[in-house]
Image (cartoon, rainbow, N blue to C red; front, side, top):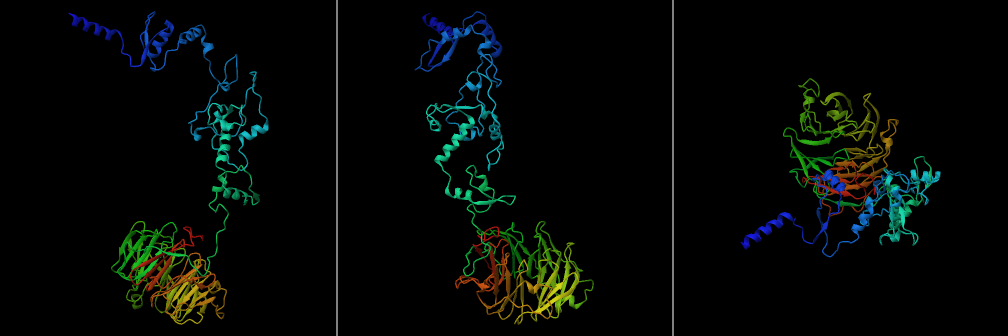
Length: 596
């Protein structure tokens, strides 16, 4: 019986009393009927009138219940709701109500700076007697809406910055922002201004930025303005891609010594099994692609990045021994030619390879002259509309390339076989070089020779090259001499009786010239001969002198067969008879083709 009584007593205790967590004390509930009715409406509890309930409050074991809680509650019971609560509409005091400006809203110390308000405008401050705030003058209003001179207008301004107030004496971290020892509350915009001032004290403006601001800069209107205002921020320094200190870039390459560095071979990922017949960079500076054609009848494409130079693709054309390969001026396709009367074209976007049409040279297929034609010497005009092909006995055929399928639309004839072609930048004139060292200047629209002259001292001239601007022409001969002419050699105003004189005869090589190539800013000329080993020189065009520091005796050039410069003048690729394409970096040029 004793055990059963104890069990009934324990079960009764669990049903009547609720289990309270450790460290809590039980408080009496002093709620009246009105509070219980409101509680039932809000929280869904059943309403029980006139019943004393118990609530459990969680308190710390080390803290005690304040004895004055019930006394404060009794004082507020007799007050009306209108005296306890009010709606803040942003206006000043009305009937003794407390406005927001009278409440001390302090900013937490751990709030990040980018969450704090920004601005430079002072807020309206209410008077001590509760009257309406005095309106600001026009000067203050103008400074609040317009940014300081030389600073861009903010994209967004928080309107609550004017009403935010921060207490500087409430935190030890904010006391250093005070201007006076007794200063306490400031508005949000003044708080931001003092934070910026404190930051400038800890991290002052660097000397290079101060000097840059003092530089004279030209405005859009063309007037010169001395930028010395301290209100100027970093936006003025980053709006231009030029040097911060105003350092002028070089416009001419220095002669004598060339800053050059060897990189990994361009075709190291997939080397050729024969000599390199042709190589060319993609004409677009945005596409870092290199085309390499070798004697094994394969054309390889590489992505030149200066590090790994990954291999992109290999094309094999068994029916055509490719001796010349070049990009179309638009960069959309590649033309393959050789010792055959036909050509192949490869479209880079679709990946389709097409052969020239059967009626390329006309409808007479039994003509022996057409059967012996070779398209090894050919060149596109700068616009890519016409393709000039050197034939036999001095003929130069003009192939229309606008329709996509080539068709011969005309021809011009020189006295001897044509060894080299070069289009002038205007795209309407063509210069040819014959075996007798005579240069012809043709007007394509009329199919007539407008200028003709013979290379000075030339014997067996074989190579003709011109720069992109049409200011220089280089002609190489079998004797190893390269004559460099000025723009007057390509002018149609000269008479046939006047022969242009070369600017200089470069005699650094002693064997037959096989390669001559200008870079894209006409300051470098690469000449080479594949007859002997390591026969290559880089010529400084403004001074017409060779660089003395490169190539050296240890430079592994081999028998050079082809040379080309990248569109940005940053790289130079050199192909030789061993199937290697050496890649060098010209340090004087940046990635955009400008001198450093």
